[in-house]
Length: 443
Image 1 (cartoon, rainbow, N blue to C red):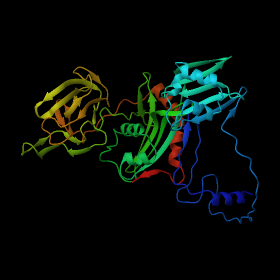
Image 2 (cartoon, one colour; image 1 turned 180 degrees about the vertical axis):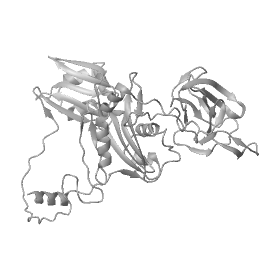
Image 3 (cartoon, rainbow, N blue to C red; image 1 turned 90 degrees about the vertical axis):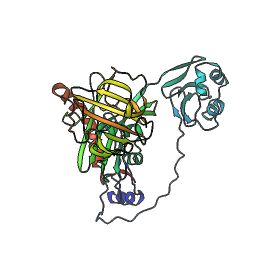
Image 4 (cartoon, rainbow, N blue to C red; image 1 turned 45 degrees about the horizontal axis):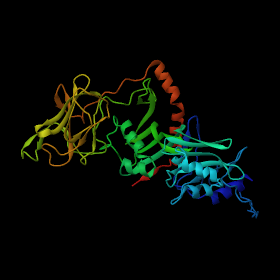
């Protein structure tokens, strides 16, 4: 019997090129199919030498599948998605509602009229009795608020308030063939999570220069749900990035103030004091050098900063925590911002098109905050950011400096961290250990 089942499954299951694992807190379920083979990972041994018995064919009439309605003690719950051109009456009729009083209530009650925010694809759940009278209804109005209608005796009551949310974990894996975003798109990784991934490893990987074809990543991240409907993503819980053969891992730890930080498996801090780049996914057009031919002055002179080419309006990030010391215009720099950091370090951001709203001298900024936008002001021949890293007000090459890490977790915090990351570590290891290391790759 075992050999027969193996033969049937091996012949019936198609070859899959991709596997996705959905994860929730405290549990995981994985379904994987070996890429490039005809075997699914359900315990079927390949190349079995046992002789399979002859196959027999059975014909049997199967009952019709049950409807999507869920019977309860009082009535039946149904779910429908709003279709293009739907009206309230048409939608409720399709869901089995035969209740003129309920229709009138929806049209006249101020809260119930929220149901008129019909958009194709939105889900409506409701309960009716055997006669089609409306007993209850639930509808996510704007992604965060839930409309609830319930019957109390002969009357209907509508409530609108924050919808209860839940968080689940989801995993994505990808392989670099050309760029991080192309690979992330192929892996169905949402853009906000891709940006988080780059930020998490920004201290160890220069995503402008360090990526290699064949680099790969695995990410466990939060997905928020309201009444079973996904409404957005949260933070990365765990991530692994293999860059040029070196493996980097990161795990989320929320401190007592609710701030997210990332650490290695041993509790070492991944967040360096300074980001490697103030502009995401840009390219360096002119590095730090003592001799560069100036395109405007038409002479050789030192270029004591790094130029990042990017479209006008691209956000500029402050590379470390600090205090803004200057916001304004300075000769060839055009619109410029200066920030003083801890100790002897300071940074400068020039040629900006605009400053962040309400930015002013004396304001405290945190690493990764948007402080301005790429422009072409001052002595600039094209849109770019000129970035300077200074030590005791002397320009240094940020590409060659060894930037220090943050403080590691110690004592009770480290013990709590190691205990907390255990489920995420299991799920991350599972993603990497899939047979054939199934990845979504993008060219």
